[in-house]
Image 1 (cartoon, rainbow, N blue to C red):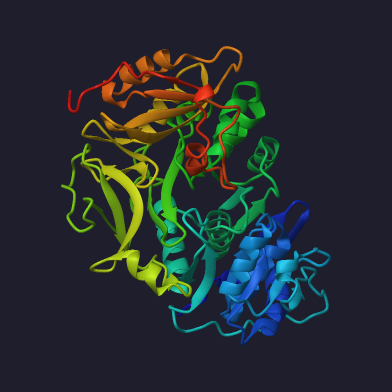
Image 2: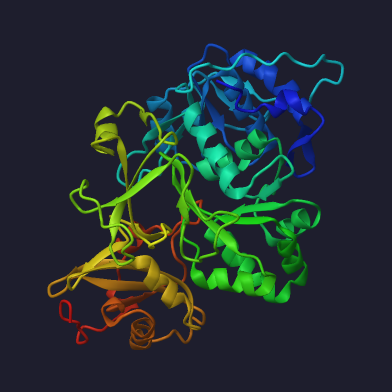
Length: 504
């Protein structure tokens, strides 16, 4: 199998990594990663204490060079979750920046400090021979664990290379690109796409350490060409644009703005485009599949969609039985997304039962995400089957389109939509609102009329909860299970007397 990161040998003088004031060229990265890779040789897996630092990137590159699976560990994880990951993996060592204090759950592991200062007198390193088998595990990335303990998705080198090469095609991504982002490095988005992606292309990555709009302005204004972010980040950008002409100018100069990990509200799409002339591309992927679809750089801008399947990826929508395909080209036909292709993971570590349950006959991976497809193949995500698909009055309703409609109301700052049991409708639409003005929140009836006027009467919320903030995870995703667990009748308004009969 060809090298995952050929630029380590081919372009030693080209910039590779920059975190704050610290940076490495490809030659310097090879010089510090190769000796570490030699120390890791023979290991099966190594944990990487995945802080947003140069050390994390170097540690992961060393593991890839050694053919050892990297297990990125979220530094914000609690003791119970860390203990589960260590017991489930279990790693042969933990890589960390010198001086980093590790929690007790990692104390029994052999610790290896990551050195990022290249020896100026050292001869150019001989890079180790990488594994020839493309099925060799490259990463074990643990899922969020919303339905039980986190599961370790084993990602082979084949999945990493195929996804990044498919994105090269979709985004016209080359060695001339410099990517800027401030994403965490324990997740597929920030680590595999955001660090290994530029390195596979032979380009550069500039990590902000922590996201802020000033950092985005600085890096894009000084030569960066691409920005990766999650919807929370782009929302902050949209909020800042009216009073920050330097940010607008910097974004205008970017070649590509990409959002992922959750749906970007159409309202934020429109505000960014109006201020900069730029469109934000959305793509769709999962830990288990890496990337499945994307709006192409040379494709039609279409806010609210995640584009078309990437090269090599097959995608279909299925009915509730998991095998009957939804008719193609019907934009109202909702189905579960299933995918297959070289981007798929190998297994859930130590969980053959969960691995078997995740696949339908024919090697199709059941994503649990619901979507519709436009006649020309563009995919529109409705949401998670478990939390975002509401079956009300005989209709299948996607939470995402209602959330977009609510966010267009001037009195709404943030919005989430869930379903709740209803004796007449089966499920009712429930809205969770963070008002723009907490002292004068919009009324439930006004919000219901607003949604009904933009979408359809059966999609209007029947219950509205008012919150100070929506619960989110580290990637900015709204934690809907946390919402449904905290329903408080004192903080809601209901429209029990305004019902829509099934199909009426």
